[in-house]
Length: 183
Image 1 (cartoon, one colour):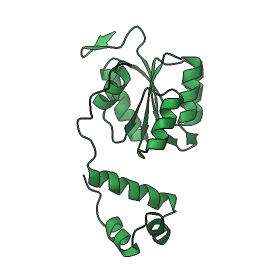
Image 2 (tube, rainbow, N blue to C red; image 1 turned 45 degrees about the vertical axis):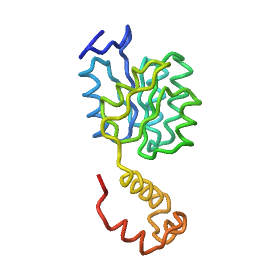
Image 3 (cartoon, rainbow, N blue to C red; image 1 turned 60 degrees about the horizontal axis):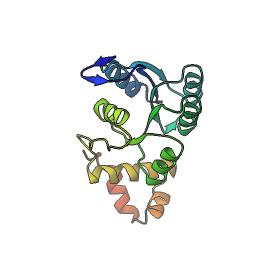
């Protein structure tokens, strides 16, 4: 099956697993327009159930889900369908999680916000070639801001604890948190 000049092979099945409902629906529609047969799940449990009953040729799995870790879904897909091409998505890009995702069978790893073009390029990249760089990567300021926000949330929004863990002055952190996110 081909759509928009994209060769998806004989089996265009795609499993999308993400707990951000709005993002999941937008990505699902965009991937259907590209010719994929999309199935969506919002939890680890639903993703594992779908992967067990209907192992997909392609999958996009969010790393952090409300009920657990998306890597559990990746393992289930890999067990049921070793040839599946899997991309792990996360809002918290980190080297350690990227390595873990690839070790258990992910084809690629993308940081949010990733658009349908980035996801499609990562899913369809051949094993011996790297996917093209993203069209609109996050700026260094945005990556820094995302990291600070993540640590702040992990510290239960405790400014003093966040500042200590980031080795940053408390007032400096308060000023950063008071500003809007950079683009």
